[in-house]
Image (cartoon, rainbow, N blue to C red; front, side):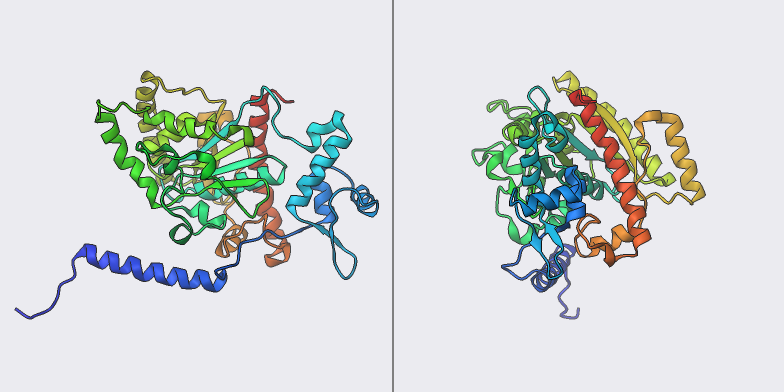
Length: 398
């Protein structure tokens, strides 16, 4: 036999993983130097005025009078504000006009419970992470205090929000650190980190989250050390920080495991993403059947499965594709108002922005064709506004 070393599959995969990891680090260092941090663009005075709910002239007068945060002035005299300054102005206006405070500062009031939205589907490619990201940023831009939780070990949401899972996180820096079964557990407030997007905080994810899937069966079988049931642990951890937020948005992993069940039990509402292709709809049928069976077991064990709303959101939609239109019509005939009226379009604008780990909210309008940008953003905002309407209804707001 020739003296040739045969590489086993595990060794080959490990080598490929290390090669890819090194290349990704080189690429990251090139795009984002070690001391650099991701930042959000500033907003024109017109954009800021629209977001706050005042006229541009009123905002200009505040600036001239030296009231509120002062905008950055360009050489040609154009004023621009950071999102942090816009949120300061919201608080300023709420104090200035207390009768209209809710229209300027929409934070939840006493008696309005924390809203936790779990975005889920166990099939990859349904734009689950994109839906989560856009919803979280939409709510933050609207003035809400938002916590995004990345429960997907692939951690795409974390990456999009400026955290590189391989290099920026240590042991216990994910939600696993707050829900683990041993003495290493720590408070969620010690895990939450600010993002470059003012008003949007993050509990990042990485492969460490898989430990919860591995440890839960052992914890369930360990009768000598009875632990809090797995499906309550996510909710208990979130409750530790609920005073700081209005809405929590959870990006669930693409499988129906203990993490997903924990998120569903912690949630006050569910968003189920659907890509309108027959193979995806058939897969979702199996997902719903499995979910129903598992949740019935959880409910019998004492899990709280009362949700304010459950909505299906059609993603990556091509409205001029006849088969897709038929599937969307089928979903609406079956589920009625449980399907969001607005669909999120498949768009090169969303894809192009994602290449630089950005969203349509972050890029300058000139980076993509204006008509493409406007059409894509309109679909995203329409879907998210329906979700926000559901949150307002749960709060009892008109």
